[in-house]
Image (cartoon, rainbow, N blue to C red; front, side):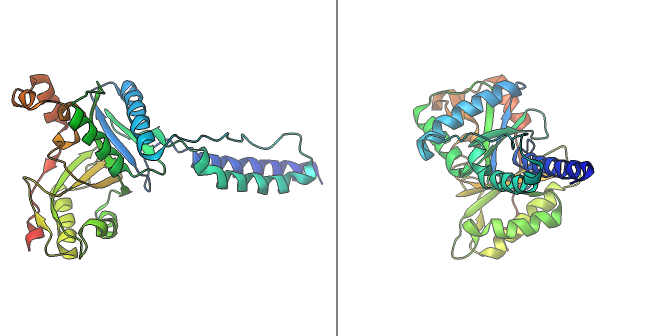
Length: 289
């Protein structure tokens, strides 16, 4: 085999394996991810540390201890040139089959917005995990974080364009709202670093989809069974349907641990912070049609 042919195979192997590893090690919020969106007060680095501590604690309660696997860092450089092609195929297959084994249960990725942390999850039900955390903190009133404000599960992501969102939501909402399933609901909306999605249009579209899946789905802004959470960051739309949103103080970890007495006398600084972070809520009129 000529030296140019050998170099070509080595170069091809490097590119092939490199692409596979880059896909495995994605470090930014992308379509198709599930996870947990967390807002904080300025200190994102400390927020990530608190998130890992909290999620690992409760993740072990629900899913058991995380099993880690050693990651192979590539084929040996001493392979014979004649075996390069076979080694390439073998290594690519190993990367593909071991991808999930080598990914961590929780991994911080770039959210695309300031004071927002996104923790990608693997083999975890984000809504179940976050509800479990909030229920325990609400019951025990034990404060476990200092900089984390709100913790919102993200069970689905799609491109943040009207047609993409409508198409995705039609399937996504079926679990909760398609007959015979039904429930009262509200929609909360927040957009960051995005100026091409219209809040009113999004709310109207999503409410229309919920109403079309079962006419018995009704709006309730005071005590809904379900809250549809829409969080848009740049060109990514994060969706979830959560329970006990009002009871758990809009999924705010600082507020949910307060006693009833403390709730009646809010801290001015905390109130201002929550006001800045508060999402827009509007009654979707088409849902009652």
